[in-house]
Image (tube, rainbow, N blue to C red; front, side, top):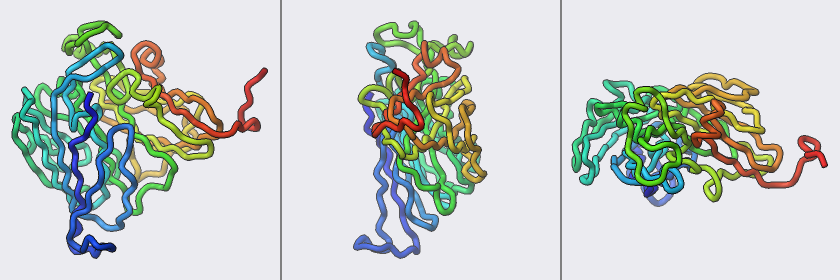
Length: 331
């Protein structure tokens, strides 16, 4: 699937004075990133006017090796682009629906205080654009998704992503940040059946997915696409659950989460020393841990049949010297 994101973020500084040649009123462009990458932490210390532009598309992509699916997307990727703003920001969001789409789409951001999270204002027909403005009042990590009837079908076909509203002062510094989103796909064919698979509404209503995956496909976080870190680094995972139905029991095999912000609640003290964390559909979590030993670590939904038989597994590859005082295999 085409992973080029069509999200453009501009930060327009009203009365703030900027350093550098751009000048006080020039827009600052924040480069978009494809999952599992995350935009860099914000360095500004005051709220700003932020303009976000997203495009919804309907396009064929890869669900598993040899398996295709017609995804409905934000920005051409599943999940959609990671949006990073700050508490107090004034956000203007433009939602365009591709002229190649067959259906209307919309966006409901769980970070929004207002009717439908923006969904009522952004019901947009193919080839059109809708706009609304909102203020980020609550810091946290939030899901966004399509909310056009039939809402469960739009979500089940891939229309979700994450938006981080950083608190004042930002989050504590870490070495690596990654973006993961778990979701299910309901297909007419069984797991691994080759060819273009159609959406199966009956399976979806019965909550019986053939696929449970991270970042939109089996193997999205393995092989050349595996996440990478070095011994001694601190890793932060921004994790969402697009659902539409299942709760995730997120776990990293061989690691313990030093800190967990359940429900993405960055305004609360984190929990510590956690083995697995529950993430409901339409929910999120932030987990942080230091990688002490090199090796291959599996990221799974610990409802373990989903990892082994349905695709809910990723890989974190940690490089560096052995640390025998912490872990030493037998001979």
